[in-house]
Image 1 (tube, rainbow, N blue to C red):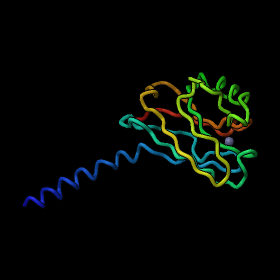
Image 2: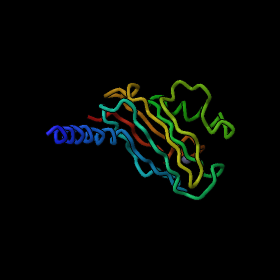
Image 3: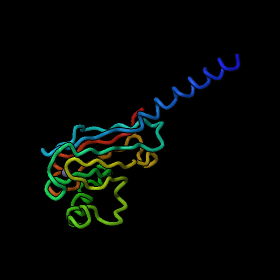
Image 4: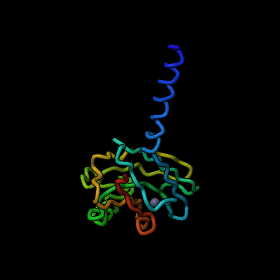
Length: 149
Ligand code: ZN
């Protein structure tokens, strides 16, 4: 009997991580300057949200680099402009820019990287943007981030 109960307990706890799996998302970027998603919705039960960025193209970082930055909609333009000024040597991210809520590193074709979005910084009812800060990319490579239910 005891073994049976233990198995049941294990089954019950094993079903919990199914929710945790929703606290992660893979976003693909390609050589045509596109992300494969326009919207990231973070379940509010998540403490942290893990994003994997996969560059499915072949072009090198210097020609077709991709990253993901997360800011409020209001900060997007300013952060994007400052990122371009920061230049390739800084992977197009202004050092110490506190308007950036989360970001990945810049990668080239065939590479994959991961970063986490701190969910306590994403407020319900506020609008957030994710984008690639490589010069000229944010026009196409941009989408929304919001807190889901
Ligand atoms: Zn890009």
